[in-house]
Length: 82
Image (tube, rainbow, N blue to C red; front, side, top):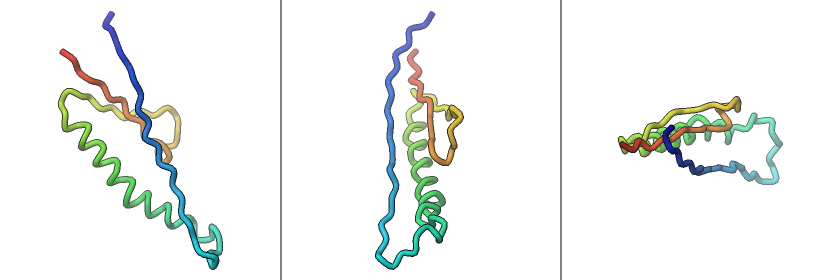
């Protein structure tokens, strides 16, 4: 049986937006969050994957543990040691 070492790195983003007194509440359907999801999130994921896949010593596998993929991205990063 092979020996395995493991560690974990968590990068957690807490998103929020502040509005002026004239803000009418959530009637806009969280436009600020939709803009983040459509513009910033894909760029973050692309850049993270670009960095991780640039080093051939690592194998990257997306994993899903039943959580909503819009709320969590989980990747298995394995170092290939020969």
